[in-house]
Length: 139
Image (tube, rainbow, N blue to C red):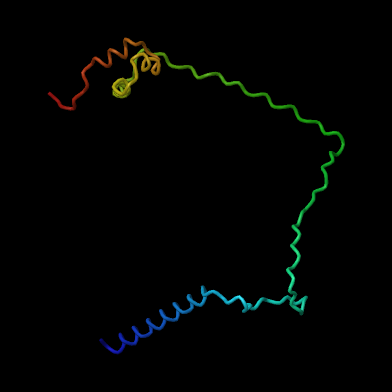
């Protein structure tokens, strides 16, 4: 070991010991007879043995709202009735949705439920289910 390394180790040990001692002093219980120093306010030069009175909470009161003159309430706005969007009745399922139709029927939906979802006949859904799925291989 060089003398620089030994000096660093000694300094580190001293720092650790000082920090440990400071922490122990911080959490060391104080004897009951010894009183810690309390800050003394500039108003009272003498220290009172009785507890100070409980501080009263600040309560801000607002003056009552008095309507100025006669205030008329504006009429409530009428809700705007929107027309429902017209569904496109094509009678067929788009080709991009055929895989989804198969997945829905494989995972528990009945053909009638899927037909209602796509607004087509049950026969159309059964036709899609019967068609062999694309295997991904070319012939």
